[in-house]
Amino acid sequence: MKIVVDDLSGPEIARFLDEHVQQMRSVTPLESKHALDLDELRRPEMTFWSVLDGDTLVGCGAIKGLDAGHAELKSMRTTPTHKRSGIASLLLEHIIAEARRMGFTRLSLETGAGEFFLPARKLYEKFGFSYCAPFTGYRPDPNSAFMTMML
Image 1 (cartoon, rainbow, N blue to C red):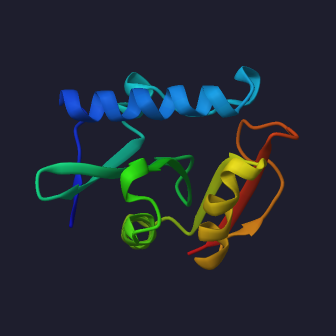
Image 2 (image 1 turned 180 degrees about the vertical axis):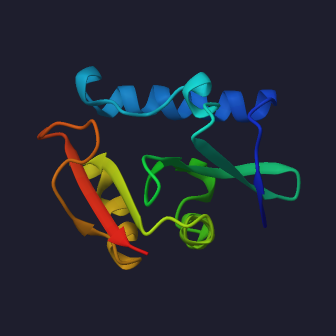
C-alpha cells in the first residue's frame, strides 16, 4: 500500500469520488449531504490523498484548512471490496500526521449520525476524536455527527 498526494486529474479518482457522492446521496437526505465534488476538492485549501494497492485505487481522504490552526477531515472512503482491511486506519494515521506536520493543532470532521456511518464513527473514536458541536459553517443537523481532536 502507498499513500500519495493526488492532483485529482485522473479518470479513476473521478469515478471513485462520483461513486462516493452517489453513495452519500443514497443514505443521507440531500440537505444533510456534505460530500465534496471534484471541483470543491481541487480548491487550494484542500490536500487530497489516494491509497493505492499496486496500481489499484482502494481509498482516499483529504483535509481542508479552515484557519491557521484548524483543519477538517473530508472525503474518507475505502472501496467496498476493501472495507475492514485496515486501509482507513492506515490513511487516517497518515492524515493526522500530515495535519500535524502542516502545523494544524485541531482536526475536526462531520460524518453521518445513522447506522450506516457507525463503523466510521467507531474508527474516529479509536483515533481519539470526540463528539463536539457543529464547527465552521455547519449547523445542528440530526443526520450529522461532529467530531474533533487536538493534535
